Length: 351
Image 1 (cartoon, rainbow, N blue to C red):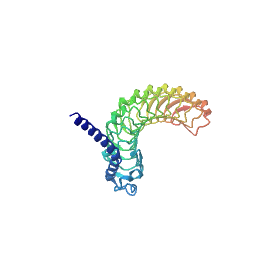
Image 2: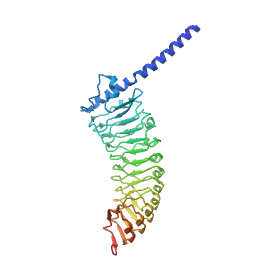
Image 3: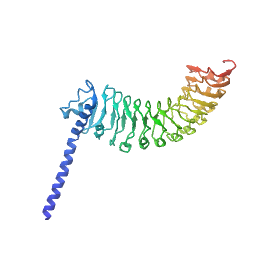
């Protein structure tokens, strides 16, 4: 009996090891079958994917757009290959992927990416994907770059994105997302780039976005219509270099706290309903190259502190209700290329 049990255990161990070796040996073949299945969903892939030889599994690592490591497909880059058709959910079976780009094609229909725990970069931009992106983001926990710009996505913004703790780049712009910005997006403290521009968003801009102190660029402009104004909490975004909040319905005053953002080189707030005076604190932003506050309802005088912005190339204050004299300190702006101050109620001499 003891000998029988020992032999049974030994047999089980041999079977387990053999199965493990077989699974490892066959994994690249599995990836091969996934890619063949994907190609079947593409329209007119030729001549872009002529190297994808479905009769030779061993050639998969030499296929265009495919990169392997340790006998597994870890990168699939199909950028700008003029492919059409749909993207099968089978793509999520490439479980060792760290990089996936489908950008710049004509893919249609819905798409879902899941169960890719190694995935760090996902780019589905510039396609014609429809539906939403309400995926299981807990299965994409290592994602650092997510770009879905310029598709036909029509849904609420995906809530689960707010759980991606390692995310640095998020672009959901150029779609038809509607509703409010999810509060959870304020938890993405590692984010360096955020774009939700050119959608159909409503509600208020969350003050919680001020928690994203690693942000370098924020783009919420165009077609979105936000209630209220610019959150004063944005004054905490001390690493911000570009603020793009143009033509998105903002009203109320420009927060003087923006004067804390010493790294800013671009501020685009034109085409809103901003009122009150131009904060003199904007004169602290000595790295500014572009300041566009045109087409608002700003009143009061042009603050002479703007003369401190020695690097400024573009100053657009036109189409407001500004009054008083043109400050002589603007003469210090020797790098100016464009100065637009027309359609105000300014008076006095041009110095």
